[in-house]
Image 1 (cartoon, one colour):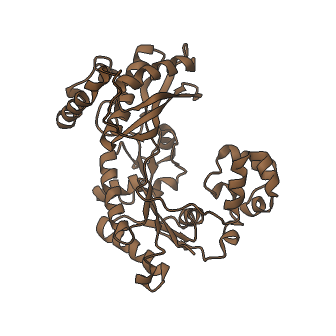
Image 2 (cartoon, one colour; image 1 turned 180 degrees about the vertical axis):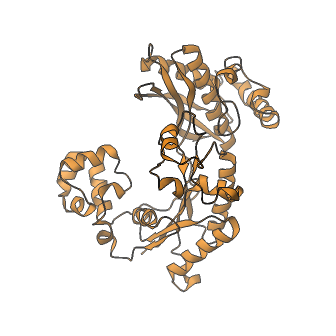
Image 3 (tube, rainbow, N blue to C red; image 1 turned 180 degrees about the horizontal axis):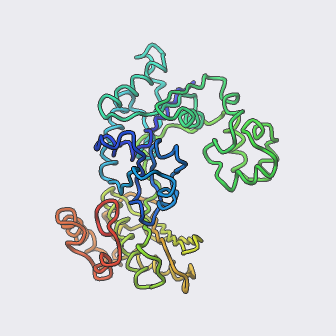
Length: 399
């Protein structure tokens, strides 16, 4: 029988801002942008949530709900990455079997380490919580179970600063009274379909014949059947590799200007590729996403014949995808680029790609200059004027 922890940092972005700026303590805080800016809330703290503010809510809606003393911040991805790494270092001092699934969440398989705590899972979990609080002044919620899905649900139920333990053999009973939305993997659309079948709780879903689930949802239905019955054999994956890298931005003002859209998409493609190079990966699949003024969202993706980390090779495909989306004549408020389908970096280039042979050295020099002197110290012509029409990103660089 395995013992799995899911460690979740409470209101991570807002919590880090409060640690760095103690005067924020007790005030409603929203990370994601300033009060009157466009965009959405990336992370509200619990004081803000009491007023009905939620993640992904438009900033202007949040501003209407919150009192005048609420604080709105752009935040800093670099600071959050640093704190995330420090939390992971603490977790790995308790067990080497750790899988980081996001900046603020990690699964731990502590099965082989419990003997150090005389088999007492609560003692180990409390020690983790205390260590993170003492060193970083952050609170975490921990879910403990025999599998990952139950540990995740337990951690969510315990927020904030909670510890919920699902005893072995009680997994199905633990899940049964919960609303179906509590189960990871059941999104808005799936929940709506289940509600149409008058299924409100995970217990009701568990009682549904597996053949009905298979017929209604295909292989996803079979997976749902296993999870709601408390079964999840998926392992804690060590050296977890990010499955995709995405960069998107809300434009300072809605626009249908193709030149502006292409310049912004090139900038986002550059940022994706820079991250690929930093991590030593190449990508084969590119996705372009746009959102119009009426909040309709359009998305298309294509796969290259060879993986790359070069924006020069990816951007022609980005251009083609934007054209295929057929958004001409619409005003656009958000654009985004995602790269996925990763492969390890390969130094051996195809002999037919002589032009691409110069890219690694060119990118190394450009990346180094931008790292030392700022993003705008050296830019390609297509993005050079974006600072005139775009506000800075949360990283402090012009996107």
